[in-house]
Structure formats: C-alpha cells, structure tokens
Length: 115
Ligand code: 5GP
Ligand code: ZN
Image 1 (tube, helix red, strand yellow):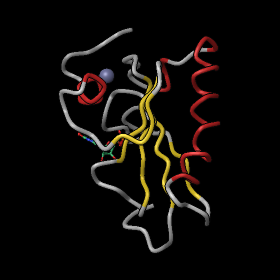
Image 2 (cartoon, protein in one colour):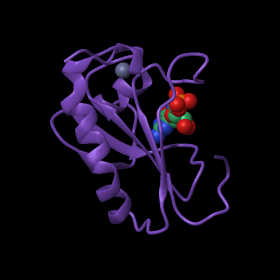
Image 3 (cartoon, helix red, strand yellow):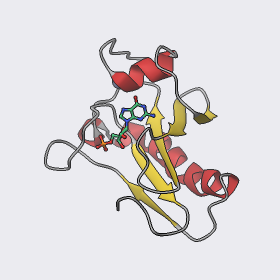
Image 4 (cartoon, rainbow, N blue to C red):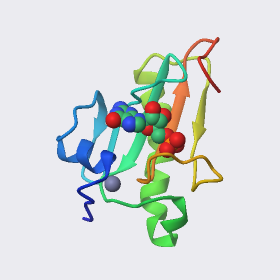
C-alpha cells in the first residue's frame, strides 16, 4: 500500500484528517465531499496512493469495477432516487485538484450548487 504523507486524501485514509465516511473496506474509502456540488456528493478513493486515472492500468480493473458497481448501492443508501452523476477529473486540463485518484458521485434533487 503506497502512502504519501503530504497527500490530503492519504491523510483522510490514515485518519489524520477527519471525514464523514460512507463506506470503507480493505482497498477503498468513500466519504462526503467537503464542498458538495449536490445534496449528496461523495468521493470514492482507493486507500492506495494513486495520483490520477493516468496511473491506472488493466491491473486496476477490479478496483475500478468495484467502485462503479458500489456507486448505485451507496446512492440508494443515501436516499438518492432521481439519478446521479459520476465524474472523474484527471490532470490539470481535467481540472483535477487533489492528486489522489477519486470518483465523484453526486445526486439528490435539483437545483445543485454546481454541475
Ligand atoms: P477534484 O477537483 O480533484 O476532482 O476534486 C477534489 C474534491 O475534493 C473537491 O470536490 C473538494 O471539495 C474535495 N476536497 C478537498 N479537500 C477535502 C477534504 O479535506 N475533505 C473532503 N471531504 N473533501 C475535500
Ligand atoms: Zn494520496
């Protein structure tokens, strides 16, 4: 497991920065975004420090599949019934701000603050 001591999401994984956790298992963590765009806005991250989607390969297919497969279940648990958006920002042109791979999952009734 790679851990970057300067990475904000690695600090969340390590419990050194608090977060509102939605789901945790051996290799992933899901928590509420601190600045939500929508009534429900969670971030799904690998516990392993992977900077961006660029760094994922075929070896990561099980993890990526697990994340996408869990998203609808978590949205239902969080009371989202009218649909949701799933978003991955990659690199500067993709407007990725936190360099630890994450999948945004946003839902809940409109209007939203953003998106
Ligand atoms: P990006 O632009 O990299 O795709 O999105 C990063 C997201 O991380 C943003 O939506 C931002 O609000 C969220 N974020 C940044 N710092 C923290 C934090 O310390 N805690 C939580 N829960 N979310 C954060
Ligand atoms: Zn990290």
